[in-house]
Length: 176
Image 1 (tube, one colour):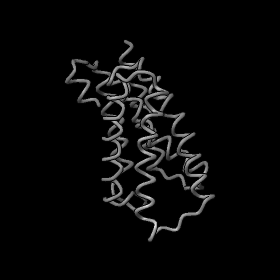
Image 2 (cartoon, one colour):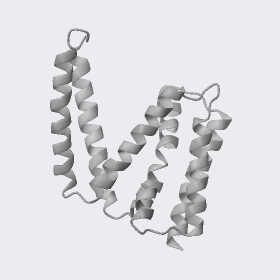
Image 3 (cartoon, one colour):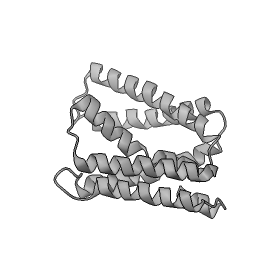
Image 4 (cartoon, one colour):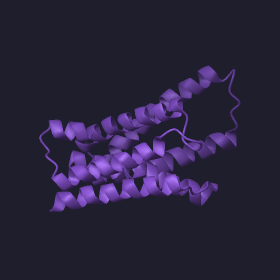
């Protein structure tokens, strides 16, 4: 998204550029191989997911009503998911309660989150939106610690501080 914003003519200040680099260094530190780092295949999938989310956000920035856009996306995705579940039914073991929770958590929480994100995108430049998105891994890691009992490591603390600090520097640099 940052590259797209630059291509579209957005020009960050030196402070914003330093903030991006700091946040990206924090992301690299979080992803570096080690005892608690994700496997390379998992990291590659996360990177691909981040790139897809960037395209989703860029397209959503110019979309109309966030509620209608997200509802349409969810209907189309749901149809695909139902077809996939039917095709895979010989090897899947679907449980009604599990499906209900998946639909509720995916449809409600993700849907509300996407509507909020699309609404926020209206007031952000592409590079600002990309910068804000860099906070997601640190927030997800904090959720893992708070809700899943994952351990806090020095690397996690330093990487999260670099990510969040870099984002704060980048956003503060845009205002100056």
